Length: 64
Image (cartoon, rainbow, N blue to C red):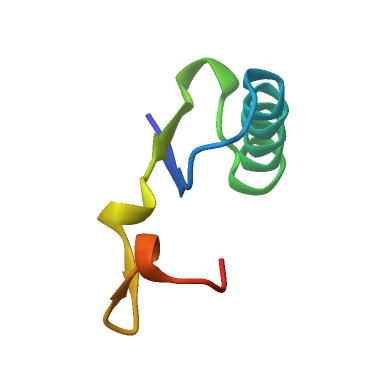
């Protein structure tokens, strides 16, 4: 039972997420011999206040 976890900032539409999980599934089938019916894709949306880079919270960054 392969599990692929994608962590990203909120803001993608449901349609974008549909395309993403399809592309991930296709890649796992092609490159990792995964069976689509057994492949789980989890999307975790991480708020910028719950993420930091170089000691600065994302909510405080101006470059993202």
